[in-house]
Amino acid sequence: MSDQNPLPEIDALTARAWLDAREAILLDVREAHEYEFENVPGALLLPLSFLEADCFPPLGGARVIVMCAVGKRSAAAQKQLAESGIDNLYNLAGGIDAWKKAGYETQGGKYEAMDFSI
Image (cartoon, rainbow, N blue to C red):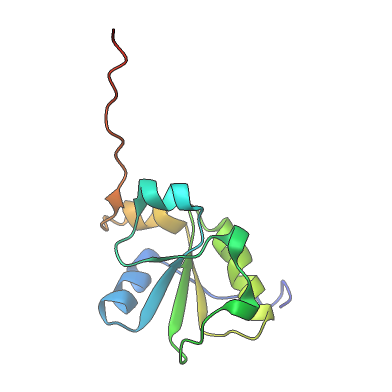
């Protein structure tokens, strides 16, 4: 894909509408520790560091919303998948940060307080 024909981005509102209507799946390409700390309920984890387009499962034409923390790694994953012939890919602009700013739910995000007193 050339820079003159960028891959599509969507905002959190559109992503939420598609997910609620079961018209898309959400693919989180952050690393496992980031996902464990905080994630969007129902998102599938496939870290960019392990992403291999040749092993990507067939999705029957479903829309795939690719998400990371702020939209950079997801754009790279989207490009990698698109170059391998996978279509219906949409980058979530702003990533999980935009999702939270839109007021949508995440899970996790809390570490247990640790008492280091003796």
